[in-house]
Image (cartoon, rainbow, N blue to C red):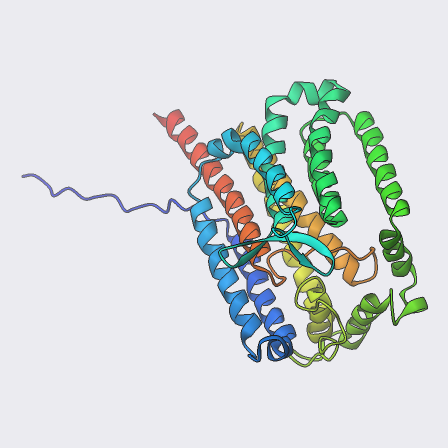
Amino acid sequence: MLKPTVKPRAQNRLHIDPVLMLACFSLLGIGFMLVTSSSLHLGVKMADDISHYPFKQLIHIAFGLGFSAIILNIPMQSWERMGQTLFIAGLALLLVVLIPGVGIKVNGSIRWLSILGLRIQVSEVVKFISVIYMAGYVTRHSDHVRRSAFGLVKPLMLFSVACVLLLLEPDFGSAVVILIIAMGMMFLGGARISQFIILLALVAGLAVMLVIVSPYRLARVTSFMDPWADARDTGFQLTQALISFGRGEFFGVGLGNGLQKLFYLPEAHTDFLFSVLGEELGLLGVLLIIGLFAALVVRAFAIGEQAEQAGLKFSALAAYGLGIWFGFQSFVNMGVNMGMLPTKGLTLPLMSYGGGSMIVMCGAMAVLFRIHYEVTEHNKSNVKGKHA
């Protein structure tokens, strides 16, 4: 007598990293609450609508998650093939944004393009492209990077073009982030320490020179060293941020109860969202966010290590690059808010208000989830091959 065929239970093929998922959605959720808290009064002032900014940020997050769902279905091999083309496209975007009448000027900087009513900060797109391009370059020229100084200098010559275009916007902070991404990935790709130290010294020297020759950059550096010396002008933003942290103490004044965001702290819902967090959620909230970003970066490097062990070098370098990007940018944003670093126009990843940055960063996280998926599938296929 024939037995009925029983279909095997469908297996979970998503291979979701639970820690990374928890960190990402926690940052998105807490960020949305803080953006809401810090922008209600702005909505009334700018659009006569208390829900103006929270509603728009909710749309940004929805677009970001939708975009990440698309990115999640793109194989890493496709990114590897597209790396050089994407880098050229990124340079083209940096040129387009500088065309008079095309780029959108905000607070004296021309950094945005308007696409279908959505403002896209070009530098965020270029950061993502930089990770993809460098992962492909180091994968193709790993021996050259390890043995030759020119192997290090060659990609940086291309990145210097991007940095010059960023400085014309001006966007010094993003230029630094892109160089850190490139150099960090080359170091992890096997560059010799002696060559790397020399190169790092040259880049640091160039950065110092750019600060010295630019009056506004020099003013930012000097004002952060003693913001109280000119608390009503050059040190105003930082002093208000420090007052926010001081008022928050250990437990905070409570979500929505902060005062500094009420027209005292400029850019409270964007670059200085971390200060609002310090005032309303206190030291506990600050430590929570630092812990979530630390978990995200640690998981990015762990996924990269797993990919490297599986022989997926491009994926490994891409994961390392994403970890460097999110780790360094969040560190700089927090450092600026707490007066540890000069003021830079860098958002807090996955948290600050903004459509373009939110979409790009959600897409970047989707690439990391894709790498984890492919590594898991690769390891499963190897195990099946051994038992076959």
